[in-house]
Structure formats: structure tokens, C-alpha cells
Length: 123
Image (cartoon, rainbow, N blue to C red; front, side):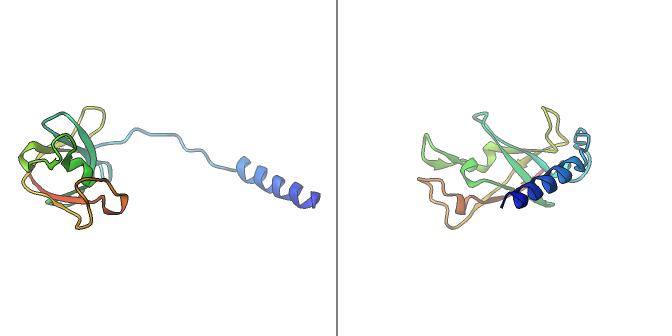
């Protein structure tokens, strides 16, 4: 039993010793895929992450479009998406014209299984 533990330990040490560590480089928001990631803001100043999935669509979590205080969905006109967002800089400010929420999302609770929302945006 002890030799197996020692062999496993030595294999692990050898693997970790040969691990290639990469230097972290800053994300260039003008280059894909970083250019497709951004923040969805509403007029209340709250924000969620979103990602461009087509030339006219952004995907985000459904709870980002829900106002728990009023227990209603936000109006599309109150939303805008900052494409290529990174530490206050962004490539484009896109207005949301409409959105769709997954059919299983309950407005009175957040369920991970139904956490999808897709909204067309226009410049």
C-alpha cells in the first residue's frame, strides 16, 4: 500500500514540476473573444455580464431583467449593453430594443435551470 502512495505522490510532483505557467496578459477589448463580452446596465445603475451571440443578440442571466423591488420585468428601453467592457472602457454602447426570457423562468424566484435571457440590441 505504501509504495502505491509514494508512486502516486512522485507522479503528482513530477507533473506539477513540469507544469508550464503562462504569463497573464491584459485582455484587448478590440479583439475577439473579449470584444463580445460586456456589461448590461439598467437605469438604476445595476449591471450584469452579457455576451454577444449574434450581430443583433446579447445573452445574459434572466434575473438581470427583473426588478425584485417591484416584482416586474424591466423595460427594454431602460437597458443598454456596453460591448467589449473592461475596467470602465468599452467598444460600443448598444441600446436594447426588446428581450425574451426562457419559458421556465419564474418571476418570483431565480432558478439556475431557467437563467437565460436573449435580447436583440441596436446601436
